[in-house]
Length: 194
Length: 215
Image (cartoon, rainbow over all chains, first blue to last red; front, side, top):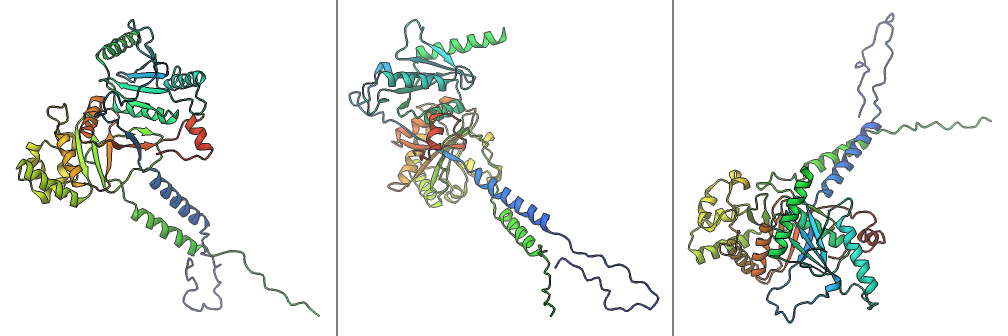
């Protein structure tokens, strides 16, 4: 297969002519086989890995009357607000009129929203009397602002999956909160530029 | 008495056949791989830890591009025909059903649908098209589209997908959700790129234990 016929077609040489040394034309194909299989593996892996995944989201039914709606205990609620440029804010329970419990966090690094969620989760657990379902009262309310982008929304929904938060809701931001987010966004920008 | 000498066999194996097989497989895989077609609507999806693979047939896909423009894609041609006929009879638009069936996506207001369909398919680029109006509740044509699509799929399984761009603003997303809600389409899936759960997180721990992620 991989050899060439070098015998010269049966042509006899004269008595005084010295025969040239026959070089083997056999090539070791092992590295080529290695390369072939390497490429196959590469192609198989790269093709299956690029399949997009789907994140499921169930929307609440707006038509449910207020009496049927889920009531959340104030102590177990964590509200997350999102502003422009990946800014993220949160408060526990209800927002105080003076805004003193309105705090800022980040997506990763120091003071990350993950730590905030985990802290709140542990806090709810420690106060829970229900041993079967200690996280029953834990609800995360997500309020994306008008300036935040789609990626942030997905990231925060993803964070719910990562931290196994069972109850969360995507809620429209109120005007007061929207103002607060805007002011905080602006102030953090000036502090960066200064 | 001399012992019969066993002829020494060479340990060299002819690799040619194996090489042939390897490259045959390689060419087979290369040729059968469907390359991602150049997308008419350029969208960069965010990543999530969701492990469920997005459905690739019988889906209805709503795309939000980076400017917040909304496009509708359906893969089932029969359903598309149904949708086109319904739109024609309800709105008297007289749209070309054959062209509608062939169109990869819909990205124009109802009033401009005819001129949209007259553009050749390869020239329809998401960034040059107006998209389906979905800005506010007064002029949200997506509500109408979703209603027609829902009727076309009446009783059948329909996978509603939402594909948004990383930098699309939240209000665009909210308006799309509002259109879904209006039609009581309360279950949908968002198309994302796969990502591993961060190490040390609860999800990571449970997946290490071999628990399956909930859908």
